[in-house]
Image (cartoon, rainbow, N blue to C red; front, side, top):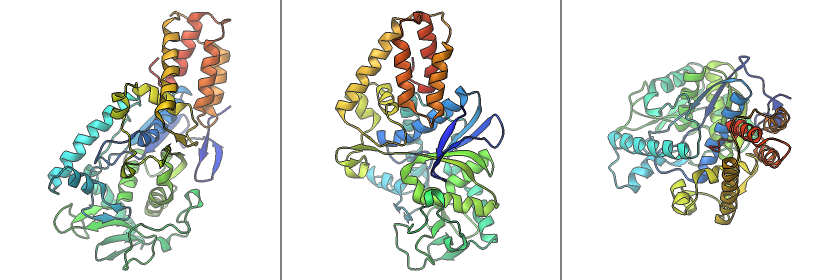
Length: 395
C-alpha cells in the first residue's frame, strides 16, 4: 500500500506522488504572533507534524517550512482588524514598527515553547514575514505585469475576475467575499496585495505600507520550496479565503501549479461551539498544564480522532486521555530493552497511517500489540518505539 491523503483540491483521497521521487516539500501556515495560540490552533501544527513524521517513517526525505506572521498592515485588512494591531492595543503599547517586532518576537518564542512541549518537530525553515518583504513585492510586480492588479485609495488589489479558476480549492469560489466592504473594489472577492500606510511600514513601488496577509504565505513558501511543491496544510477555516487567495496569486504570478496536495484539519470545539479567543473559550497549553495535565496527554487526546473529524474538548475527555497515556507510559516501563520490531504489527500500523493518517486506528494497533502476550516484552517495546516515530508521544 502507498501513502494516501485527502486532497481538499479534489475532495478525494489520493495516492501521494511527490514531484521529486523520494522527496517531500511541505508548507504549513504558521501563527500570527500577537498572543498565545490556543489548543485548538495547535491541532493544525500537529497535523503538519504527523504528515512529516509519516513521510519520514516511510523513508521519504522531507523539507518542511512554516511561516511566522509578525507584521501588521497598519489598519483593517480583508479579514477584519489586523491581529498585530489588536495585540499592541491589548498590551497598551504604541503602534510602532519597533513594538511590532518586540511583540512578534515574544510570542514567536512562546509558540516555539508550546510546540516543543507537544513534541512537534521544529520545521527545517521558520521564516518571518518581516524578513521577506522583497519577495512579496516581487510576486506583486509579477502579477502587476500580467494585468491582475489594480490600485485604489487604500492599496493594491488582486482582480479575481481575471482568474477563471478562482476559488477552485474545495470548489468554494462562488460567494467568497472579503469581510470588509470597500466600495472602490471591482469585485467583492478581490483581496489586498499591498495596503498603504503613510505613517508606518515598508517602502514599495506603490507607496509605503504593508503586504496583504495572503501574499506573505505565497512569498515564504515559494522562496524555500520553489514555485511548485507537494503539500500545504492548515486549519479548515483557512481553505475558503486564505488558501484560495494563495493559489490565485501564486499560480497567476508563475503560470504554474502551486501545490499538489492540500490537507486541512477540522476544528477543536467546546460545548458552546468552536473554540475561539474572541468567544472567551481559547484555552492555552499553559491553561492545560496549570490544570495538572501533561502536554503530551493533549497530543494523545488529538491523536484519538482522525484529523478530518471535529473533536470536542472537555476536561473529562482530557482526563480520559491522560489516564490512557499514563497507562501507556507505565506499560513501557514494565518492558525490556533489546528486542526487534515485529514485522507483522509494523505492517498493520503502516497500513493505518498510510490510509490518510488514521492515527486512532494506528493507536489501536499499538494497544493490541502491547497486549499480545505471544510477543516477548522486548519485542513489544521495540515495536512501540518504532510506532512512536509517527505518534510522537515521547515513549
